[in-house]
Image (tube, rainbow, N blue to C red):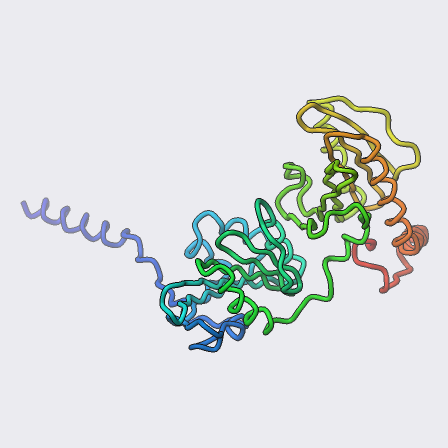
Length: 333
């Protein structure tokens, strides 16, 4: 009996030592963020009052605040999200302000721009903004602001108060300058760190929609890490049509490599590589519209980077001894 008791006590000790430690509790109201300075306190925003202390959720704890969305914001390397909850002074309306902070304005633009879908109305709040049925979305420098509210137009006062306190970005990401201007649908620009045309290997792409006499065409530009990476991306996209559709004749003098293809479900495609850039256009009607967009983009890129490419070639010829610090990082090895 004594031996049995000893075994029972030992088992109890082992089980106790193996018990998991309770999860560490974090007070999100005690965490600091630069975004806190943008939230109105008390009744600073006309018609609204802050209900409780704002919270700050660090980027590595987003799953504690979000359920399905945490993975999306992690893709864009969100530093944190600051949240404030408000009630109208009349007590009959609510609003939740979420300020997502990112390392740079490109990633903030990406997290914001991928929400541009469905029925929406663009607003005049810079850098860019739009309104949906129960939410307002603003891209402002390295921040993405999302306000969920049942107040409709009444929430704009709160949104403008927040946005006016934030630093603006100088412009949209410069890569969009490679794409044609005139047939581009206003406000259609977006940056996706997740995919392009539904394909994950076309991720980290700068995308826009074009309207040519009612024919809608989607285009994208991917600044790859190097020529080899760009070649792999183009080949992966080409193989998609080899497996599912058919390749057509390539276009003479378009980039350093190109293909054209079509498929009943994937649509028509024109894609090419020039230096470290992959460019692709996808549509379902006139192939010539894709060709014209591709040719224009090819010339715009050549006109922009020709000098940098020549400098890079000279550096390669002399074994890398020449280094021009004015050359963009994407040209350097």
